[in-house]
Image (cartoon, rainbow, N blue to C red; front, side, top):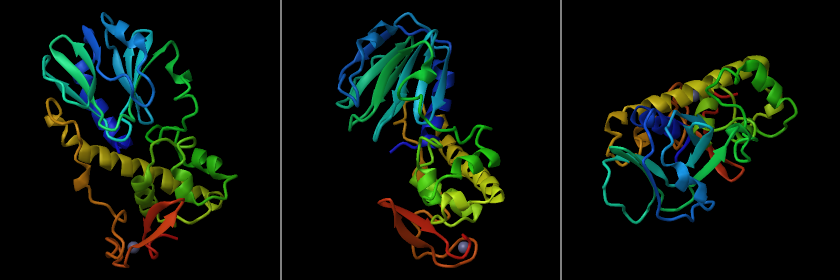
Length: 269
Ligand SMILES: [Zn+2]
């Protein structure tokens, strides 16, 4: 499933390809995605893409006073191709921008193509999203305040997108390792100093993943759009029984909220 770093890498790859270009055509081959693709998107031709932003795992293609909202769902990818490239079975949506084509491929159809006029931040899918982990808004004080009333384990807390967006299972485990905090610790028990370490660790972990994916950017045009996250070197994720890269203690695995958590019992308190 595309995670926040992959969506951000996609965004960075798309900006130089699409920003400032005029949309010359739209085709919807399969409107039955996670939600039906609204007919409004067919009226996009003639508008100019002014920029592409990201909110959580949503990409917002700004077109003047309206915004195309894209989500990659479980299996989606976006590619920039030469116009006229034959569409495959899972290529459900195209945006033609003169001499280039933006194409959404989504075999499992959990992705989204939606349209919002006016204030996109108020859209029902975006209005309740938590703080952006890479923004200055996620800092020690804010994380400390957010966690105060929560008894749940910090690992579980981090994965709640209504509080912080885009910290998926892998990144929650990795961030807690970097911060030296046990995944089982109650969120409200974190000290201000631990919140400071954790806020920094979340940013470092996500930025490292973006950099790893960024190395695939030069192949972005015409490539399959998938970023190379498999090669990423994790500290704890999926390393049960293997030695901790810092202290050689075997990494342990436990299940929290039906998700696997990996941690070093010696480095994380
Ligand atoms: Zn260790």
